Length: 212
Image 1: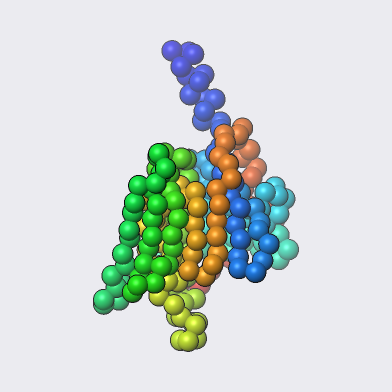
Image 2: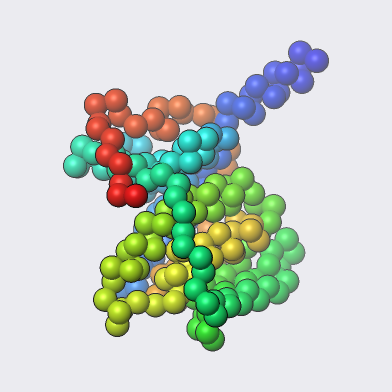
């Protein structure tokens, strides 16, 4: 039993690290690092001392740490208005390579998001990513409302608001392409020794609540 406990303690002291290569249209590719524990998820560019986004899974809060501004913006879980009448997104899922599925999310005939997901690759990371999107969805909806009508797109509502976690239910994204041309490519997933300091907001940094 002591051996079993020791093994369990060792796993409890790990964190999962997932790395993606992301690219926006016309810009060079960049690294996105995701660090995960049972209580937190951190997103950054791989720099331990840079800006980062922290998901507090227990408190259901997202904290955007901006070192240059010496400020931490806090987003709390909120409510969304009901889906609009006639909102009928279509999720098409097909078998891919062993252990993967190809997906395509469309709204009114427009492909909003497509890619490949793996159900058994870091499943907790996929769930945490969906939690983060769910918390940010009310803010994303306000951004969409404030966007000039000619620039509003139903796919923004699909990807960031109403269907923000739909494709993540299929598993960890290995490839993604959004209607904007933004792409994401899985690079690696590993277990690393836990570093609690990476999941803390600096004590000297004031926290500011985002508009509700």
